Image (cartoon, rainbow, N blue to C red):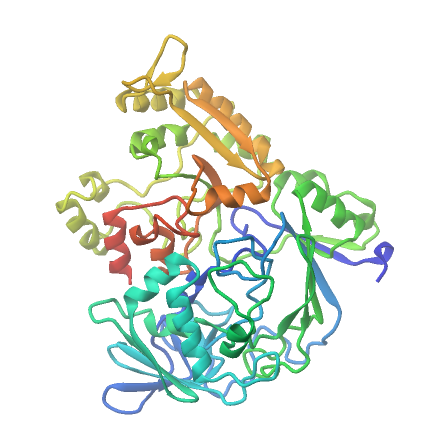
Length: 563
């Protein structure tokens, strides 16, 4: 297909829909599917099922032939190409070393898989059935015997146990920490049957499905290639998925081709999906370069995350000629808003009043009108646009969880009567004087007084300095007015621009060398064990997910309550 005749699609990506197209695989996703569902009682305590669901019965019975939202006879062929920023020097998505290539986990599958038209439901993929007792203290997966890795070798219980044990001892530390707390033992009962037994006293609601979400890779390939989940490596793990790596140009291009011998092509969960012969990802140094490349036809699909570009830049010849389709697609998905994250490992941010004061100086209303063309809506919950978002004052059931934390001195009593926190509303001007006065009073009370030079310092003369770490030129226009507002408050604020590699190094362990960054508000579609990775104290010191370093006994207890 020539560049002059390319067909492309651009789709808006606002604050309710924004998500990174190809980020590092979040292993927390294994916590999205939890237990219960269509089932057969084998004995007094044992249930055998083809899938599990948190919310009542599974939509699809054991004899379903394909998912309702796919065309089972969809034509296959062609390619789709997208873009991402920065570069890559590894094909291992489970190591903190190096920068993993986009979609580098796409070759891997898990025992269970979810659907897009149910919340909290998953079905047997690599397994035929699963068995679990009523108390969910263990789970047995009965594996399919026709599953093969992309090299044609069979996937067996030995590979499942090896994958589990490798994740338990290597790779992402926060995932390893959570996993080690929850699983007492894992064993192969025979070549196609595995059992996980869970730790007594731990919440078991999510655990059978968590184990079903574990990515499985080939033990033989791992060992023969001398792979190490801890290390950066350009040799990818061998999985059983529908795509395999094809063309790899380090730091520039990644291409995956559809495996013509994919074992699961006619599986009910897979029929009508994975229709492109090739998926290609092009790398660019920044968003501006990527957009120019899209206009020229270098890649064919773009999720637009810049309101300015969406409002002002889609007027190029290819669009006017009909070669590019610009469309806003409605989404009923959970809001995935962007947020400024404090590095709570820094002593200056331990005081809530300091954080509140800094937050007050971000004028969302002015930013939305002036910078975002009125296209964004503010979110006030990591579960925005779902029934889980907090609203109003705590209800009776919520109070039953909050009151013990207040009694233990872990939360302030005001949480029992205050309404759910919403973002502070600012005026039409960039610097809201009312919020400036509120923020000033908070910093005064926190011991950060204004000196003769107009800058704030503590009792020992240390200046209150705040650095915004930024690797996106498109976000300069958002951060710089914020910096100006903070300077008006007497804070020595600045923005430091870094490239993708520097940003990665400074926001990962062991350095965590940042004050404030822009990131996503993360959670699963409903509350589960993934919250330990994002917000649990045990993952705060060495984590790719709990980047802010949150350590809160109250949050830990609430997560345990949820689980």
